[in-house]
Each structure stands twice: as structure tokens, then as C-alpha cells.
Image 1: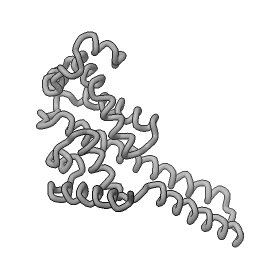
Image 2: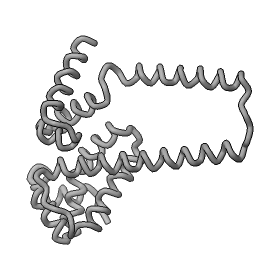
Image 3: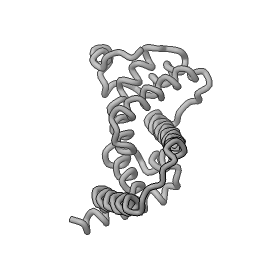
Length: 194
């Protein structure tokens, strides 16, 4: 359904594309406009999604699902104050919904496996398991660095994607002052960590 990105470059230059016009045309049923919107927004949506969950295939699938949903529900979708903000918010919700589904599926699989196996671990296996988990958690905490997830997300949206504090507040579903606090504290932490 979606063309190669090079097609849009021939038809419209990316910096000249008006997202609001593409949005309106896509909502009116133009497959070409939806395709162009996909091509224009794919890179920054992928970068944003990858910040939330760093799994390339997962993010690519989520973006595809987002645009398929937009197409299927085009007649009921409202105007967007900011198309970029709307797409990021929608992608964020979709990613978290997919993560919840995967976690629920994993929990069911684990419960089922335990029931089928019916084996109790020995004390030694439990100790090894607990220690391995503790080591993994420690390594993960160090790898995440000095910033909280919310701070990382706020920094990414502000400095990498160029959103305003108001747009970030809508995307992250927090108030504007909280956005300012996240960004300010993150910058302060990064300065002291260096």
C-alpha cells in the first residue's frame, strides 16, 4: 500500500510538504496523501518509537499498524491541531498497547508452562535464578544512565524532534510545567554526570 520513499521525493520535496494538507486529504480518502504522509513522517516516527522500545521490527510493525488504522478509521478521525503531535501520541498509545498484549501473552505462556511442567525448582536453582536476575537488573540500571524514562522521552521530543512544551505535554499526557521540570532536571543531571 505504501510506496518507496523515493517516490515522494520526486513528487513533493519533503520540506515543502504541508502535513495538515496531507492529513486533510488522507481523511478525505486520498490513498496518495496517506502514502505521502507515511513517507514524510516515517523517519521521525521510527526514531520516536525506537526511543520508547528499542526493537526495530516492533516499531516498524507499530508504524504500519498506525497507518492502517488511520486509513480504516479515516472517516471518523477529527482534525488535528498538530499532525506530528497526533501521530506521535497515537504511536505511543499503540506501542504501549502492543507491549501490554505481549506481556499478558508471556504471563499466560509462563503459567501454562509451569502447570505443564509441574516441576519445582531446587533451592540451588532458585538461588542462581535470583542472583542472575539481580545482576541483569543492575546492568540494566547502569545502561539506562542517569535519566529517568520520562526525562529521556521529554529530552528526545524537545531536542531531537523539535516539539514545543505544549505539544510534549499532550504527547506525554502531563501538564506543561511537568514537561519543563523533566527537561530542566534532565539537563541538570546530564551536566553533573559529565
